[in-house]
Each structure stands twice: as structure tokens, then as C-alpha cells.
Length: 228
Image (cartoon, rainbow, N blue to C red; front, side, top):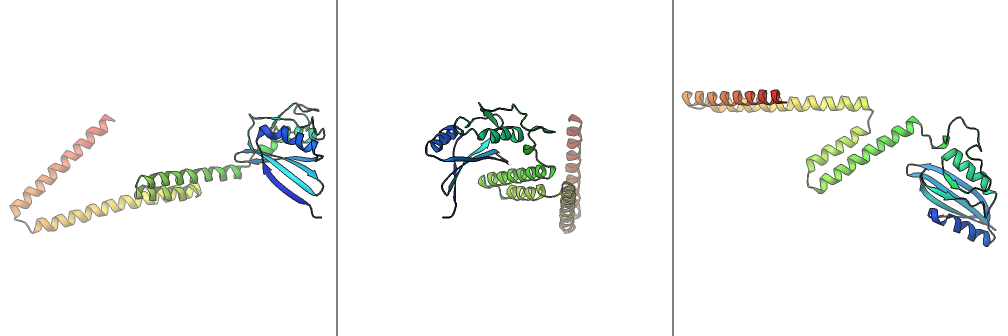
């Protein structure tokens, strides 16, 4: 008969009850396995009977959480519980044989919870992309397609090398400035074409009015600059 494995989830409050029920039913304890995840530590308890292995997992355990020891039911679990504490920082209460954090002689505390710079960068990148995606969805719901396009672009830039992203933003800013200048020049050329077709005296008055408007705008901008 082939070995069969089942995988189930449970809450931290179910750990002791699960161990007691398996002990009473004649199961044997196999292992306690910890896995470091973005949401915390996944703690998996495995029990075996005949050709069946049941794996019960408590997901997202934090360092502030306290789990009950199962050594009252399965004494052999003290090895795994001390290991989970020393390597992952999982708090387990009332271990029958508790080494108090000295089961391993380690250079650093909880080494299995330490992430590499590459993992950290990948997580930060994923967080930025998720934030940009959320902003895009929010803006789309509010009916702002242009803003949504900006959010989409920001999501792409967030996934780039920071130096490359900075160059792209600089190029985009330069293009936007050039486009504005081009539109202004085009508007001026169009206006000049219209003025050329007017009565010279009327055209002169329009030019004078435009120059006065520009002067007022420049004065207002200068005043606001001093106010800041």
C-alpha cells in the first residue's frame, strides 16, 4: 500500500487538541517543520499512522504569538520545539525539556528568519508594484483614466533598477517640457497668422493686450515666489 499524505490547516488554539486526539487514536508524532514566509512563520505538525501522514499547519505565526508545547503528549517533540525557537524565534510555552534558547550554539539569533539583500529587494519591489496597482484600481474606480495610466507607468518604473528608472523619469520630464514648448510655439505661430490677416491697427492692439497679460502673469509669479 502506497504512503498517503494529507495537508490541513488549523489555528494556534487547535495545536494541543490536535496532538491529544492523535495520541489517543494511536498516531505517532513525526516532525514539527517551520517555514519562513512573508506573512510570518508557517508551523507544520506531522503525524503518521499506518500508511497515512497528516500534516497540520498553523500559518502566519508571529514572534509575538505563543504556541503550546505538545511534549505532554509526544515527548520527542522537545527537539523540534527547541529548534523552532532557536532557529525561527517561535515562542513555545511549557516545553518538557526546555534549553532556554541554547539548544544550538549560534552566531546569531534566529538565523532562519534572516532574509538576504536580494530577498529584501524583491519584497520591496513587490510591495511597490502592489501599491501602484492598488492606486491604479482606486483611480479607475473613481473614473480617472489618465491617472490610471500614470499609476501603470509607476508600477513599471518601480520594477526597474533605481538608476535606470531615474533616467527614464528624467527623459520623460524633458520630453514633457519640450512638448509644452512646442505647443506654445505652435500656438504663437497660429496667432501670428491670424494677426497678419487683421487690420494693422487692430492687430497692434491685440499684441499690446497680450504683452500686458504676459507682464501681469510674470509679476504675479514673482510675487508668489517671494511669498514662499
